[in-house]
Length: 213
Image (cartoon, rainbow, N blue to C red; front, side):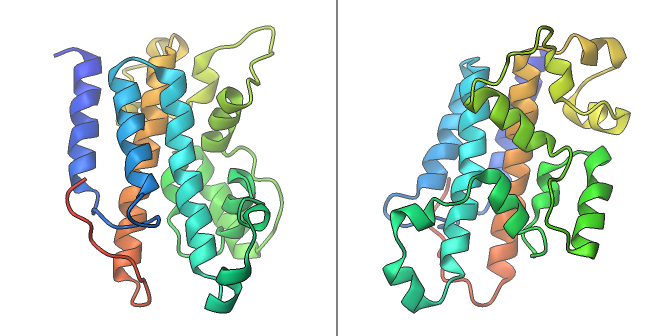
C-alpha cells in the first residue's frame, strides 16, 4: 500500500471516530461541509485547498463556540462584524485558558509553550503555533521567502515524524505539500474529535447528534 493510501485510510478511521455533533447551526452544519471538503481536497491531491479548508473548519467551530458562550441577550444583538472580529490567532488566545482542546493542534515541541502560557495567563504571541503559521502561509499567500521548504512547516521532532508517517530526517527534509496538507488535516480532525467529545461531556451544551458524518 502506498503512503498516500495509508494516509487516506488513517483519515477514514479518524473520521469514523468523530461524534456527529451539531457544532454550527442546523440545517447548514457548516462544520460537516468543511470537513467533507477538506478530506475530498486531500483525496484529489489538492494540498493547498486542503490546508485552507481544514483551518477554516477550526476557525468556524471556535467562532461559533465563542458566540454560544455569550449570554442569550447578547447573542441576539451581536453584529456580523463583532462575530467575525477574531481570526484564528485571536480565537486561539481567547480559548487558551479554557477546556477547549487546543493542544490537539500543536506538535510535541509546542506543548510546553502552551502549558506555560496557560499557567501564567499571558496574552502574548505564542511562537510558534505551527498550525496557524501553516494556515497563514497559504491563506494569505505568504510564501515570499527566497528559499521555501515545506519541511519548515512540519515539526522537526522525531516523535511527530512517527505519528505523521515520516520515516527519517531525509524524508522530512524532502517533504512535499501533500504531507504538509496531511499533517494539517490530521491535526484538524483530532481537534474536532476532542472538541465534540468535550462538548458532549459538558452538561450545558445545547447541540445535538445529527446522524452519521
